[in-house]
Amino acid sequence: MARRTGRRPGNPDTREAILGAARDAFAERGYDSASIRNIAARAEVDPALVHHYFGTKEQLFFATIQLPVNPGELLPRIAAGGRAEAGERLVRTFLQVWDSPVGSAGAALLRSAMSSELRARLLREFLTTQVLRRLLRMLDLDGTPDAPMRAALAATQMSGLAMMRYIIKLEPLASAPPETVVAAVGPTIQRYLTGDLPG
Amino acid sequence: MARRTGRRPGNPDTREAILGAARDAFAERGYDSASIRNIAARAEVDPALVHHYFGTKEQLFFATIQLPVNPGELLPRIAAGGRAEAGERLVRTFLQVWDSPVGSAGAALLRSAMSSELRARLLREFLTTQVLRRLLRMLDLDGTPDAPMRAALAATQMSGLAMMRYIIKLEPLASAPPETVVAAVGPTIQRYLTGDLPG
Image 1 (cartoon, rainbow over the protein chains, first blue to last red):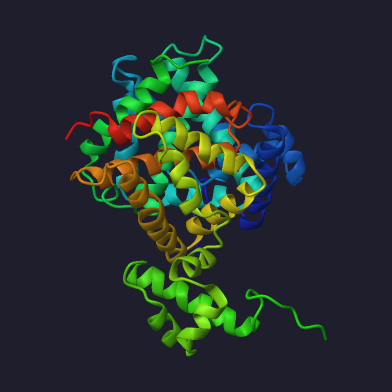
Image 2: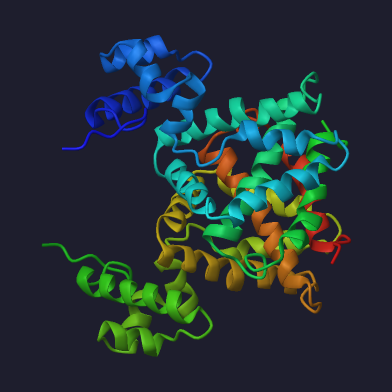
């Protein structure tokens, strides 16, 4: 039997055990508190093996939620240019990803997050630690007390846009050209991030 | 064996057959084109039996998606007072329903719509024919070409709010007092319904 090379395959049972332990750890302890060491102990493997199969903690986290894109590559695109029009850039970048073949993996991620409490927690951890917090920091918006609420409001609009355009396929939104959606929804995100919010 | 009275119980097999036929009909033909007669034919029962078990076509539709509230009772609350502040009233009414015990049925409806194409179509039909079209009409906003897009945009914001507040439970949004959410999200809905939208 030919032996496959490269890091990813490995022993499927071991990989699955590590992924299961990682899911539990990230959901229970949160991304920040979970550690490769703790995950390795849960899976009863050596921490070096976790690194060998999955790389960094961040890469392991993305593997647990089967993330199709790396927000670390997308967020700088949105942040470049500063706060002005960050809302439009966020919507535009989001639509580029979801309109691409990768979009179906995004839909699978949303569906799975709706289907169980553990998966919902993983998505929450992902949004909080990998997307919203980093975006706020890049835009220098992370210093104020209302920053987490601003980020959460942006998440409501973007998740609902994904659901209605790509999963429920509500017309005429589902067939609208991306720039029509950018022009309509961009100002909402801009207001949530930088506008006057009462309270 | 005690015989239960009232309309609802009936023969469970017949009820289920009618519900299954109704789901298929509403998803395939849409709410407007589906008829009690057609649904009865699919279920191989007399149309009178469909009326007997479920009442009107609208009531049958609500039963197929296990709708916990009747939008016909809620929409006039939102429309009363006219267009001004309709956005805030919509968000406030929505939160009142979702923050009540009925909210868990709303979450189940959203989850189920994410889980299959047929269920997604049913939610789309529900939103379009029972909520958005009626709301636009009540607010005298249904005459313009961009009315369907305005309604769809409002649906993105409200569905994402439900998902993040009640299912993903993203903080600080999940624990925020309703009026904080109304003040933040109301203006978004107001703009989608009555504001300047480019394009």
